[in-house]
Image (tube, rainbow, N blue to C red; front, side):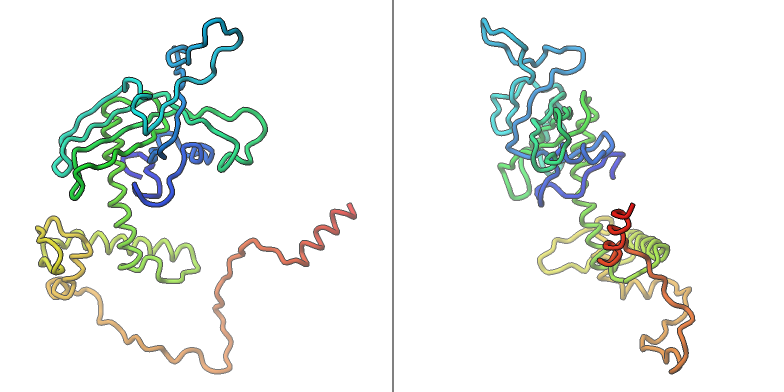
Length: 301
């Protein structure tokens, strides 16, 4: 969650991408932004207050109900794109000019499969939103980068909303690296804790350790790998700060006592009972015998 925007669980370009229908069905709060799936055909919505704005024209002499859906919007075919509602241009330091175009009141054409396979009988809902097309001049090693398509679950996005959305979406890479750091290096998932309170305390300890690594940047040297580029102290990552922990350990005060031995203790005397047994939390499973008894009770009733 960044700046009040639900950026989703995956970084751009990795793994499966959540469909707008899936997170709408799961009752995700409005304002969520996801990476668009391409190539996907989007159907233009008529929009509030102007029912015929994007209506598909009827054939001459045809009678009956007017077309329900509007013209198709294909990601890979620019001829199907109408004039964007909002266009922003931002000058970046690493990617040149970033041009973001937004089209509002678009909705996907849902079908009764995948996430909507078990939907009750009836007409599928219309999930309207905003599609954002982001294009940059170049990447670090790619002079012809592919555009990025984003889906926002709200309509009528302003220029400030468009810039805030794509810039916040790019921050997902920082989140992924943070989770990798606290899991693999700081051991967030290493202990096997049974008490939820202990798990919460361990999580806060790991977060405090990560914050200390960020604050200790000016106290360490740049111990980089042979293939890494030099970096200033304010640009060192927490993993690079941790490399110089031996030197950092000498400069910091030691309020705690000396560490104890890591060897196992004598344990409980032989023959004595364990007076502090671990509380086992129920997992909600039932044995086959319990199910048979429950079915028998239903039949007798």
